[in-house]
Length: 165
Image: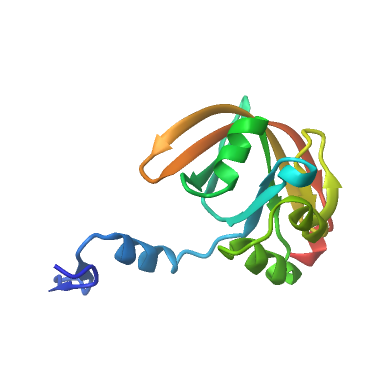
């Protein structure tokens, strides 16, 4: 059965679709969310990836979770380094978001130069101009289908110019 095949409409007007990756992606496109660039590594080992699959898990202790595809270059980098940073992008950083969303995105020194914000206390690269950065040390890794869920203990929070929205 095709992924987007409709099963009709129920009595409340809901269109009923066959559950698939395509239909779930279509539904999630309707959910407005912030955009981040997740980073890890230093110098020639720098990796970054645009992401919005993240969650603030706990306030006591401070825990944060990011979801990274198993095949993404960032996945083994977080594993090897043991830390990551969540750079919460401002409205005027769409270009940076698009750059790190591209499968052909740069890595290493070129990625570090594109980020332009130096390093955080964990060693993770920071995105200059970000609204905020949440730095985490890796606590646990959980399998989640074709993604890994990286649970980090928050060790630093940096606030940028929040007027940029």
